[in-house]
Length: 475
Image 1 (cartoon, one colour):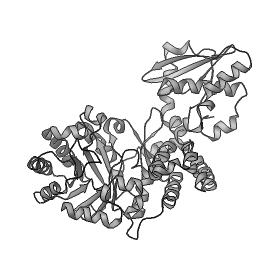
Image 2 (image 1 turned 180 degrees about the vertical axis):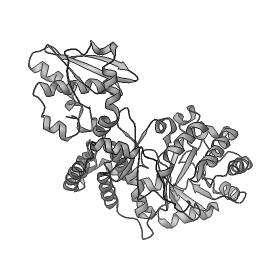
Image 3 (image 1 turned 90 degrees about the vertical axis):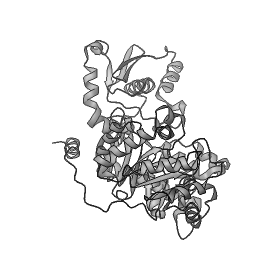
Image 4 (image 1 turned 60 degrees about the horizontal axis):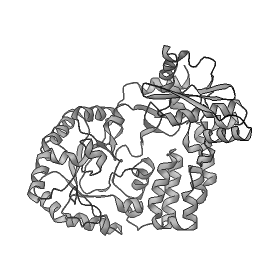
């Protein structure tokens, strides 16, 4: 049995979860759910700095439901992978299992339960987002939209508390009326949830508006379950400030978002660290856990703030790869060594996922009667287009091939793209030949780039060894 088949076999065995103490939400300092920030490296760094509990960024139920749970022995992680393109939807590891809470965006009890059953062995708690005011959440009936449908919100929570083995919580915003807020919280608490996080602003208020700790104090005195105070980042400049806001709200625990995004060492009792030290610690974790370059860059940008305008900051903004970012903070050698080590241990990222999970499906599509004639005589390779490997748009395969055609006085390449089952595959016609990747991509642009890559490789303008090493080409 091949290594990939063996891993697939293991991942489909029944999963047993070791008995561990149920997560307690009292007297805790918590990293709040933050979009694009609460990924594994930042969560682990927050725990290292002193946070008691860490929340993931909001993950939408439909995305998680279709994901595949896969152990990643090279990283010692559990990955939930999008099978259509191999991207990581959620990555976690044993260092956080007893303290990580997954925040779920949902508007449907059945979907929420399906996700809960999928992930409950790998997390300590599940939180339902009922406070996000963003348009995406509201239009989908998620987030703050649930505040206006308390019966529906309660039904979702009761379904989860009844059928899952982990503690369930939710995170809301206060309503314009204090008594109505208390009534809502009492109704939600009656579902059996373990705690409730409350952002001390209304749905329409933003960070520039002052929070309302008096409302949280009134709510906390009206219910028995732990209240987690959120929304005080404007006044949080030191570790001591976290407890001050908690006490001001009369809450059992405190949850920190923006202040932690700017400098996660705010969780550190001994005092905050300089931002360069924080960035170095964060980047090492990004390398260790193969974090997506664009996500790593976003988090470093949040830390740098106005320092992005300095010469070093401007150089950083030009970075497209994790290696390039690490070079700026003196971690270039570490990044190279670690990435090579992870590769030797079998971490192939997206390429491996495509090979183990997607290839059968995509090859089935390739053999479909509708397309079999179209690909007759086409030169095909197992080529995946990985955007992060191209630092600038001028280096993208389509652009390189287009420029090459101009220099050689040949007709510009053309592309014929087919769609099947929400996936795309393209044929690149150039200089009397036709080229295509055998992989089906999730959008038309990626499919065309993959076809151009095959053309450049077959025409001798790319190095096969380089493509194999960066995971684009699977032999």
